Amino acid sequence: MAKTICLIDASKCMGCRGCQAACKQWNQLPAEDTTFEGTYENPSRLSSSTWMKIKFREQDNENGGVDWLMTKQGCMHCSDAACILACPAGALYRTEFDTVSVDEVKCIGCNYCAGVCPFQVVGFDRLANKARKCTFCIDRLQNGLKPACATACPTGSISYGDSRELIDKATKRLSQLKAAGKTNANIYGLTEVDGTAMLYVLEDNPEKYGFPADPHVPIQTRLFNAIYAPLRILVVVAVGIGLWSNWNRSKKIEEAKEKPN
Ligand code: SF4
Ligand code: SF4
Ligand code: SF4
Image (cartoon, rainbow, N blue to C red; front, side, top):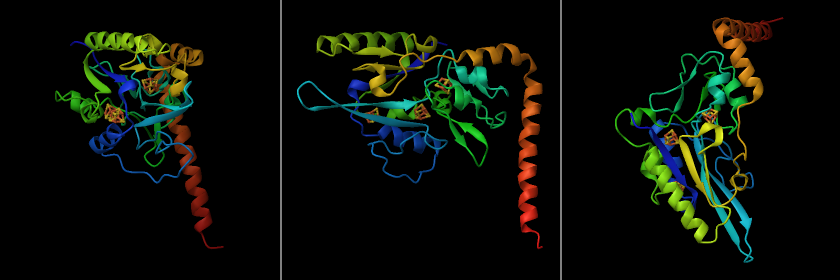
């Protein structure tokens, strides 16, 4: 199977958030109560029910005006995926499309994946005790459809297709932006974490959009994986017992509180 990716051309994003709404709608993710936190982003952060959102960054330009830097934030589907290496239960896995998914049945809710993800895109459902994130719309891919966000985008900022064609498209777009005076324009996700299935064309440095300049898998995560991967079953059992003990203790405390004196 030819490798497919999404190309996100930030220079074409107008911040309409059609992609964000399409992600919610297709994946049946509920709305969240939000408050204004001083940014134009709503919600302000990703969560178990918001798997992607549009980032808004405002910056002064040399003409005395303001530039808007807007782009999609969500799981990058890294080739070198810290979440897969960190998960003691083997719940994070690489799919047949070379994307990264969570197997909710295997997830034990330890939240390690969220802690090590260099892009901080894993949401945690406290009620279900499960990690949740963008699935790259794998159920759509398996049925020959494009991801919902790429389908909804009215400006062509998000495209989906063959990786070689989209890398070529990104390279041409980068040349256009440089020729137009965007000297800091760059392609993000080509080499970072060995390449990401969400590839970006950015008009300015990654940090200006809130992306890490040098995302990488923490060394502790690699060590953990090398040492403990063979003992995964034992780790799962130990974490399971720990979680069960915590739950049982909380239950007993609640029951003691409810008993009449
Ligand atoms: S962005 Fe984070 S959650 Fe997504 S594949 Fe990479 S490490 Fe895993
Ligand atoms: S690929 Fe699907 S799940 Fe991922 S951000 Fe796009 S719409 Fe949401
Ligand atoms: S739908 Fe397209 S233009 Fe609208 S916010 Fe999303 S990426 Fe930007």
